[in-house]
Each structure stands twice: as C-alpha cells, then as structure tokens.
Length: 202
Image 1 (cartoon, rainbow, N blue to C red):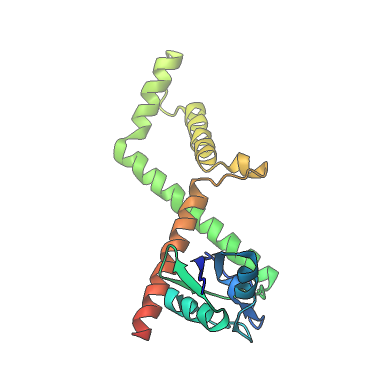
Image 2 (tube, helix red, strand yellow):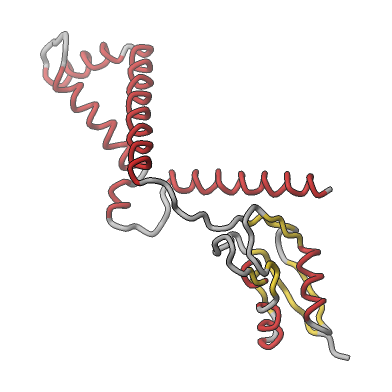
C-alpha cells in the first residue's frame, strides 16, 4: 500500500488563551497532501486547552499523527521539542501599569545620568569641552555652558537615532536593535525553560 510523506515543524508560539481547545495545528506547521493535512490539523491535543507551560516533543507529535492517520511517514524538521505557554490575559490595573512604567523610566533616567557623569569624570570631559570650545570660538571659558548643553542634546539624539525611536513613531516594520535584543533574550528564556522541562520529564 502506498505511504504518504508528512513533514512538520514546531511553531514558535502558541496563540490561544487558557481553556481554549488546542488542536495539533496550533503547535505545528504541516506539509502534506491536502486531505491528509486537514486530518492532521483537526487532531485534538488538549481538549480543555493548556493552563501552564507545556513541552511537546517530535516523538509525541509523530505518535499523535500515526494514531489519527493511516499510511503516512512522518518526518520532523528543525527542533526536536518546543515549549508552549497560553496567551496571558491582561488583568493588571492600568494605574499600576502606569506607575511601574513611570518608576522604571525615572530609575533608568537617573541611572543613565549617573553612569554618564561618572564616565565623564574619569576621562576629564570638562577639560575636553574647554579645549574644544576654545578651538571653535577662540576664547577660553571655565564653564562652556552652551557647548555642554549641545553635547548633552547630542547624546540624547544619538541614543534616539541608534534605537530608531523616530522610525517607531512612523510605524516602521523592521525591528530595531532594542527589539532584536529583547527577542533574543525571550528566545533564550524559552529554550532554557524547554530544556528544564525536558530534564524534569527524564
């Protein structure tokens, strides 16, 4: 009898909330004949959804497909396992969210300001400003305030340009350096949690 090939790979994220019925199509991408793909996509994995992180392995997926579909050869592609979490419902008080964001912003502002001031003290930035100001204006100044203000604005503008703040306001689609770092950190956390779940099962 003819055997059909089925290729699958894990999806990066789970898109349903706690309690929503989870189908196999919620966890994997499938490449197969259309009728077989429809059968696989309709396989129920968790009738009552997932309420906590769940680790699925390629072997489990292969077993589920073989139980539901006959005469198929299942071939996994990519990772051998994946960790999935239900979509979290936003229940935080808007006021508390605002206060947390405001506190974080103030903390980052003063922390960054202190770090910059300590750095400037280490390299004697005041003398550098005096030298540059004298070179530009031809006059000596113990406190080149205008130059220092311009320099401070330049630091802020440079940070804004580096993190593409202006482009964000224009709804830019491509991620900036900060988004990429956050994405990489999230990916490493998911990989770590997946490996820890695997150790618990073993």
